[in-house]
Length: 204
Image (tube, rainbow, N blue to C red; front, side):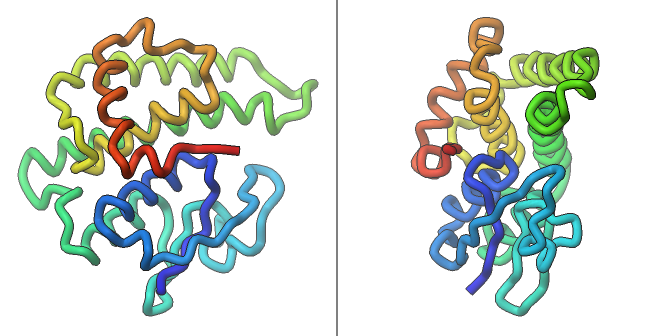
């Protein structure tokens, strides 16, 4: 059985969990709880990933894989899935959308860490504001593209974007992003209702 260190609050872990659900592999993974933190290192995770970050997977054969991009592609290959288009423009579009979703998560995480992980005297509001500007730029690009999106989690780029939007709901509810991006809001309402998304929503 595969083993995966995870955290229920991580949008990157949620990407892996959604892929595992869609690909029918969730029951083939032992989900190992962890205490991932940007400052307080969890050495249990480091046994799989020297960076001590989740998600971190050990395969059936003992190979350790990280991060979410690598793990998702491994699961897709293992199950002969179609979440990653094989060739052509469709592949590059999917991978770029994954980068957009991951970049949105990155920026949101950095903004959150500025106030949740740093001592008050070291916090920098301009840094957090700059990260949130990246969030709004990513949302604007999603709004521009969203009419082309499938309503199913059948593509790694859309899964990444869906998990990013779910993270904003979880950690940045006060942004009220739906007010400014109505097309994205309508798409996400349908996308997030899929069983694989509903089963993996973040919780404390």
